[in-house]
Image (cartoon, helix red, strand yellow):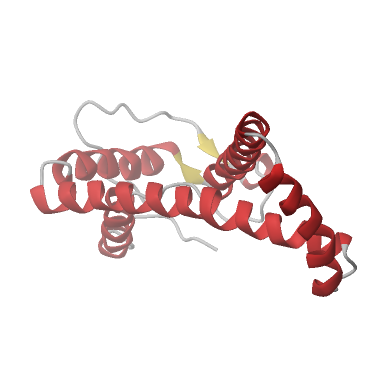
Length: 171
């Protein structure tokens, strides 16, 4: 059960045995098989990076990903919190919420321009703080999925099917 390794890849003689892994793998996976898989994947990724359609799809996916993350982080979450927190503090009674916020709004309108500017800058800073907080966690929790990696995954599944008789069994 050996797979031909591409040029420039030296197969390591060691293999992973079931006693060395945490999973229950009935047969060892030899290092040349793993090296051949990753070498083929690297070679395929180098080939498809030159395809203009995939490059265009990649940049479109990057822009859509960034716009979606920014809209969620700066559009939805601050607006949601701006309405949810006062509603919770008003015991989910919108009449009480409006009754509490109305004097604050009258005070804001009646105040001088310096106080109004200070209040607006505080609200903008709070908005940006909440937005950046959620943006960082949004980037961590939903990483970017490259179209190149998707294409490589599809190709490698087909490659595994073609080389199934030469690769060790998986469980």
